[in-house]
Structures are given as C-alpha cells and as structure tokens.
Image (cartoon, rainbow, N blue to C red; front, side, top):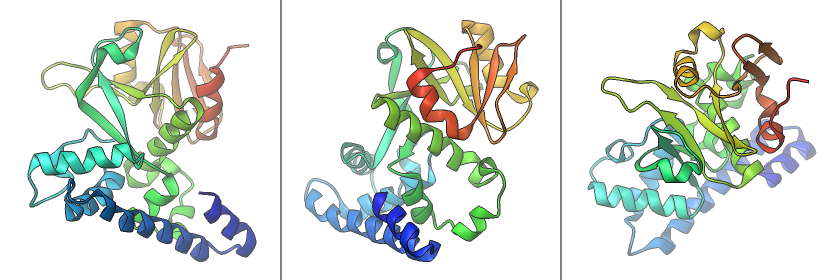
Length: 247
C-alpha cells in the first residue's frame, strides 16, 4: 500500500508503517456496515480474518467462521470477493484453453488483497519475519504463495487458476497455471530439490508442458533434462508478463 511505504520511507519505522496498515484494515471493517442488511456483519468480520489466514488453502466455508450457516458464510465471502479483498484461485482437474471452461465453481483457493495487510490481519510480527532468511519458511509458505499470486494478479489483471488432480485420496496440486502465448505452464511456489516436486512431476507426466516453473528463495537455475526452471520470488511479475526463454 503506497501510504504504508511512504510512511516507512519518511520515518524508517516498521512500527509506524504497520500502524498505517492497521488503520487501513480497520477502515475496511468499518465499511462493512454498508453491506447491511444483506450480509451478516459479524460473519463478515470473522470471514475477513479467516480469508487472510487461509491463503493458498482450498476453501471450505465451514472453516471460515463458526456459529453461522453455510449460506451466511458464503454470502460474506462473496461480498469480500466483490470488494476485491479476497481473490479466488479456481481449481482445474483437466487442462485446456480457455482455462475458464475447465474451471470448477465449487473448488477454489484464496488470495488476500495485499501481503502487507495479510501480515497485519494474521498478527505477523515484522521483526520476527525479517529474521527469516527464507520467506517460504514462514506460515508454511503461505506468504510466498500470496506474494506470487498477488504479483500474477497485478501483472495480468486476469482470473487465476491452479491444478488439482481429480482422483480419490489424491492430494496432487500445482499452485498456479500460467497462460503465455496460448500455452499453459505449471507454476509451483516451493523451496527444495526437484525430487520433492511430486505434484509438478505428475502434472508434467500427464500434460507434458514445454517447461515448468518453480519460484523459490534462491537464484535462477535450470534443470535442462527435465525442463524445470527455478526462479527467484521477485521475478514473479516479470514472468507473468513476459514468460521465460532458455536463451
């Protein structure tokens, strides 16, 4: 958020910058009153916090709030989507262009409006976060997935998708699908050697993409034989706009 950045540039104080973020979050909460009476405000407040905490996870309405009916929770969540506070990442179990034709309306993951506001809603201490050398080590990689998804959404202004294998007892999942020049590329946000990328390997065996991308906390690297490209997290926006060449 520009105001938060300006405050930090001016004061060099993370505390003052985070106070600006807290004020922005509170402003959103105060604005919830305009959703009355169609949306339950108490439910909306609960879902607002849960949306930040559930980035990168398959959304189950029952997990977003307690003591409310599923239709009430769904209405609250959809209100946040319309307000662009929450962003759906739709699931696909089969692949084809256009992706929307194959997307599920019932299975989806979630991103938050902004990674900084996500930090504040979740109560992440910036001093603690800055002590981590690896962004992927914080909150089971949720911050890294939020960052890459946010960069993709900002760069392309398009609906985001991910792949989830439609098979009994299967947990195979690829974080994002990128469409560049009419071709689909699987994108993972992980930190580890190729051998640990089981879902990505399964996707590659099934759909044989020209190459696959892994965003991680290290430098650029290429596994030529497997056509897997490892890119630093900060390259997410450039990749979403321009893709990658092996030159």
